Image (cartoon, rainbow over all chains, first blue to last red; front, side, top):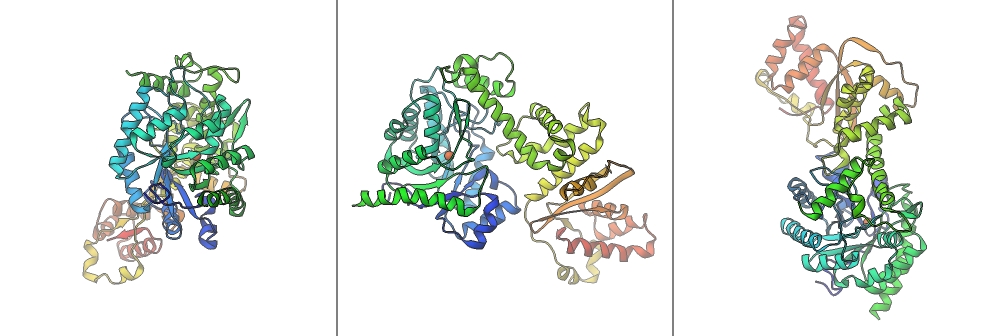
Length: 282
Length: 259
Ligand SMILES: [Fe+2]
């Protein structure tokens, strides 16, 4: 552990790596501190994806972010997937590897969605055992991210933040806190997002996600297709006050603008976080 | 079965078949904002939308040829018939050509299955394994006496296809935003090769002689065997020159990774 209390050093302010930006990144080497790559997009034999990733990782720190670990699935862990993930990590040497607190399918099918878990004792034991298994296999601690959700289960005995905290402590894993997902789920399920943030174990929070979203009737959908909104920035500010220097990045998966526009949005995050870092250091 | 298993099985069944009654509805909280069914439907709708987007990316020309409504209907049918079994969406469209070929309606327009096969070949070439390829210099250094017993290995991205219809011409027109030609069936199937050189994808038709030679090389025949076979298709005195020319072309196109 370093002075910050986290296992890994603070990387600063990053972006999700998207194919539309490959060439601009290599040509212009923009002032972005680091990139997050979607692991599955690079679990391929060769060609463009790995060509560009190899070159970009030579200039920027990279972290790997997966969507198909399916840590909460009742199916056995997918050994082939884990083997491919480990092989990719061997090539990319990411600063860390993350995936989501969710399940993505059972009976060997993949719904390609981050489906919510019931927050029960049974699910807790199951997820904890599997995170431990994954961490043993990869030889490193992983980060687990909170997802946006549109439903809750009758059976849930714990709140999401109680569940997430219990998972992290029992599995000894780190956390990727998606500020937008907390906001989205808080709206959809009418809980207090500040209470959520306050409940998380600060020493395990390694990374933040920021993103935009859209509406579908009364529900907010986590679409990553728009700029971050003011209430999410406010929540981010609260999170920085509580957790300190945490590597921050913006996720944009749709309506992807040119890099300068995303860099501007990233600078907004800097402008919020940096004075607070100094305040905490003073 | 455990409770978690039950819940996930029922939830997944809802995504796959949203219209039927499903015990998962009793497992989900309803409130003033939205009832259980509405909440589940958000997931069910997103499930289809995401997979359809993946198919749109991989089958652009098929999409254009069919138009939005028909392509949408095709996607819904495909999504029901072939749930994803892979951690990556990259593989989701792999059965599309076969699906069109066997489909009661779409099989009446056989060019569709061929167009899907052509587009899928390009998807496959896009991220096939990288490999070093041999160069004209490497070939020039082969001692004359070694030629007969040489075997060649094709680049991993190379795919041999066979089309009765003018699927590649349709694809090219659609890609260039031109009006595609009418689907046309040839008398005999036409051989095609799709491959990647560096990061770029190429395709071209093969003559009967070249197609035969390529297949022989891929079946690990040595150069003497390829030449012997060509003698059945060409006048014998032309064969050595023709075979050497083919090899030169393949090498310059980055199609041969080793010998
Ligand atoms: Fe996220």
